[in-house]
Amino acid sequence: MKKNKTYHIITIGCQMNQVDSERLSAFLESSGYKSLPDFKKAGVVIVNTCGIRQMAEDRAYGLVNQVRKFNPAAQVVVTGCLSKRADVKKRLDGRADIFLPISEIMQLPGLLEGFEFEPHFSLDEVRLEQGEKYLGIAPNHESKFTAYVPIGNGCNNFCAYCVVPYARGREVYRRQADILREVRGLVKKGYREIILIAQNVNSYHDEEKRFPGLLQAVVKIPGKFWVRFSSSHPKDMSDDLINALGSSPKLCPHLHLAVQAGDDEILKKMNRGYTSKHYQGLIKKVRDVRPGISITTDVIVGFPGETKAQYENTVKLFKVVKFDLAYIAQYSPRPGTVSAGMKDNVSQDEKKRRAKELNEILKITAAANNQAYLGKTIEVLIEGIDKRGHYYGKAGSYQTVRINTDIKKDKRSGLIGEFALVIIDKALPFGLEGELAPVVKSLKK
Image 1 (cartoon, rainbow, N blue to C red):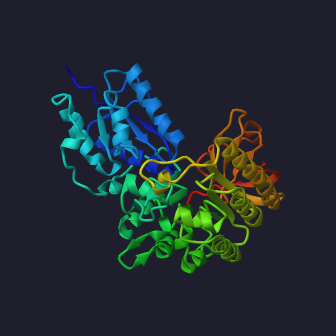
Image 2 (cartoon, helix red, strand yellow):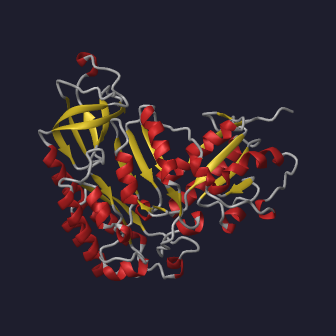
Image 3 (cartoon, rainbow, N blue to C red):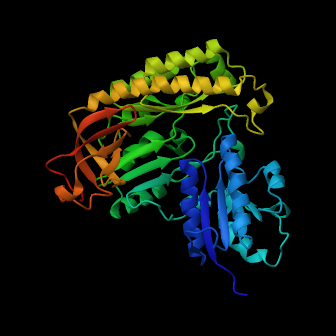
């Protein structure tokens, strides 16, 4: 019987997981596999998992069950953050066929080919070569104008709540020359937005080269494009990096800097390596160097032992910093982490209350921040057309921008994937609205 060499990838979780899936897709196609949009017909279904929250883990279990139900003949591969956990393997025994760490995806075609001859094959029986060579695989980008460029993988920080160091291993970084070669190729293909990504981008190093120098080298590449980066750790936010933020208009006026909590004792228990005062000082420096920059963050409410008074320090931080956007997570224990051994003594109802309160504060500060854009003409990267037939896109400062110009009457088409000038006439808590400027710059070379 002819082998069904088709595949379908389901991606759960962060931008890094998306990066991994893009590289896995390209590698499978170079090995003779063809992508199918319907998982029910694919010969191989890969679930790229996330273990950062219990919700993401539960979703992975549900998806594997769905695949097995609707496509019983498929070879089911679990990769990503849950692929190494013994309890996950036990729970999915008989439903997933292969568990493979993302750093070993180059082993996958061989494992798939051998699977039909060894139906009870177990990865526990082999010793796969460790390495991060997959970062150098040329990916199948989902977008034709925005590209995530991984500069490294793994984490050395061991925050008390986080599974990443266990799931992805220690930090490994690519050579700067390889990163620049990839960016140059993307810019030549017409990509407008380059996002440098790693678990800790500002820990990057290549011999004597550091992240600020990499940023400077990227923005010197000829062409019209934006540069973003994610995610940054406050403890590695050097003055050199802060100064670099103001060095080029190619660097978007947006910084994502996870704070996680506003209380020093909780930050210490989290093993974050900084204080609330230090974090606020960093934000002040950043805003001095790049006035008007958008600041986004991550925060966890209900960390084990977090008292109401300690939570109130996070409330104070939100009111002082005035974030433009925040990803607010309710703490959930992750197996193998330090915090999993702590007593999870904040009730679920209290976690929800705290998350809701922070979100209400965020709405107020973000709406006030966005008022500054009223009447201004800003550059927007057009991402698509909504159901009402209007363009929408992203500002350099990361807000979603809806463009109310009637495309049919305006007769300007072909703007998706290009920059356009937009006059902002409405400010919302998490977005902006406006009209296409009378003269739209087509910013091709």
